[in-house]
Every structure is written in structure tokens, then in C-alpha cells.
Figure 1: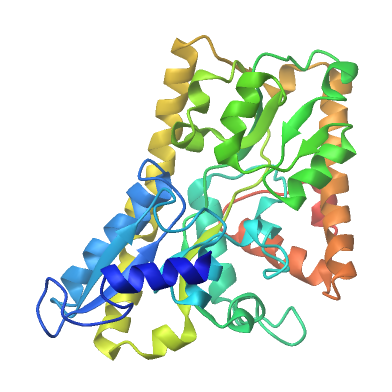
Figure 2: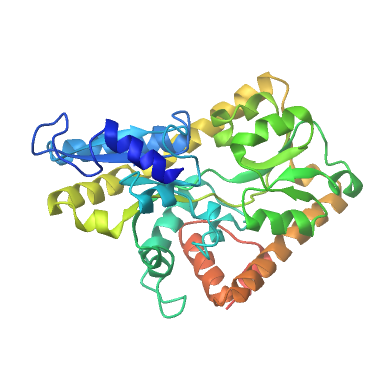
Length: 364
């Protein structure tokens, strides 16, 4: 299918990386692809502003042909599209691709205290760190260079929580047995440790599953609800407990990167630095505030974690501790030093202003 699509695109559009775009004969046109819609926080706060700023900084040396919402590739298929030459640059979300990004879900570990700006600073620091934590390589080298990529970090989403279409967490028995969508293996570990049935389906399919009742709820970021219509479905959401942050990048193959003029490379780097927190991270902050208001107006309830039955609180907190330990074990099973990876993320998060569960503080 990808090969056929490549051939079809070659007949109707300029080849990836070609000149002769709207900017003139000296303009290089790059095809940007993401499966996320134009309503997504990354598109509004990062992807589109970044492309606009790169075009401005490069003074016409580069322009973008942008595709979103599955027009060119589905969410999660962007890496294959880059490797197939269907796109020059695209959104690559490591938690969607655990086979390629062996430690890509580390940012989704549950936390004691964090927000989108804290987590985004920590994630950027993780990709820029020179500490060797995986087979003598840095995080960036092991996760991105090993996949032949040049990657720019994008702000993490706002913190994840758990929401349902109406099921309340009044007792341990009310929690156990629920069918909850898990967006990563980290959340699958968390769900299983609490007796919840994790369901691994794309967020784009979750709306129908929630409507039909085959899903009871979702691990998700409140700020991301509007991209999928969840603000009209969820009736019960926990506050005061943090289930981590989803991460992503804008990436291209190293071959594409090396083929760019130095001035264009510099423009891309500068644009990423300029826009990373504002408007990038701030977009998620603003969306979260709006979604809370919209959801409450439609009958949604936000329940403080510390008001839950103590036994339910204990169930969740025990699940949080087990998730850190089991995720380390999972990384060890992949041949990585799980404790080195996880403790490095912990340290960067704390340096950025966040807090981790007590059990995570004892890691080396």
C-alpha cells in the first residue's frame, strides 16, 4: 500500500525534497506528514508554527507541503512513511513504536507532581543529555540515531489521568474489571497492577468504543480531549494523580537532514528553540483549562484523588509503585539497564521542578 501510494504521489506532486515550489526555483519543498488532526495540540501549538517560522527564517529557501489527519499517513505510521520516502519530515511518537524506541515510554511513568512545562523541559533535556545510559550511548543516540533519524523534541502532552463515561471509583471492586484504553505499555502495566483490563486501541477508535460501551474509560490527557471528542463523553475524571506525559518528536531521516542546506538546518534548530515552550507547551495548558470548563458544563465531574475511599487510594498508589518497578524489569528484559534509564529520567524531571513517587526516590 505504501509503495502504491508513493507512486501515485510521484505522479501528482513534486518529489520529496525537490525544488521549484511556490517560493521559486531556489525553494526546496519538504513534505510534512502527521496522522494527528489539525485540531490536535501538537499541530496547533508546534507543527504549524514551526513550519511557518522555518519558512520565515530560511527566507524562502524552504517551504512545506503539509498533510494531517490521515491525509497521507495514519498516526503511528509516520516513521515508515519517512523510511519509504512518502514524507520528508513528520511527527514520530515513540510510545506508539516500542519495538523501534525501546525506552520511548519512560515519560509515561506515573508521577507525584508535574505539569506540561515541567515534563517538556525534562524531555528536551533527555534528548540533549550527554549521559551514556544505554549500551554506552546517550538516550538520543540509542533511540533516534540508531533508527537513522534526526529528531526535534516537541513538548509533551499535559499530564495523563483516568476518565470514565460514568463509572465511579467508589470501591476497590468498582475499579477492578473496568475496561480502560491504555495508550502505552507503561499504562498497561499500571492497569494490570490495579486489576483493570487494559485495551490497546488507537485513540481515534476509542470514541466509538466508549459510545458503544465496550470501553469504560481511558487513560488520557484532558488537554487532548478536543482532538477526539472525549469532552462530550467523559463524566467522571480523577484529579490530583498524574499518570505521566505522552512524548513525541518531529523527525526526518539522517539522509534527508544531511541533504539540507546548513542555513535551513540552522533555521529548523532555531525555530524549535524559540517555539518549544511558547506556544508549544502553553497550548496544552490553555487546552486543559478549556476542556475542564466544557466538560463540567456538559455534566462532567472532576474528583480529587485524596477524597476517594482510602482503600481505593491505596490500590492506585500501589499500582504506581509497581509500574516503576515493572517498567524497569521490562527494559531489563530488552537488554537495557532499566534502572539507569528510569533514574536518569527521574533526575531530569526533578531538576525541572517535578516530583516522583517515594519508591522512585530510592533508585540508584
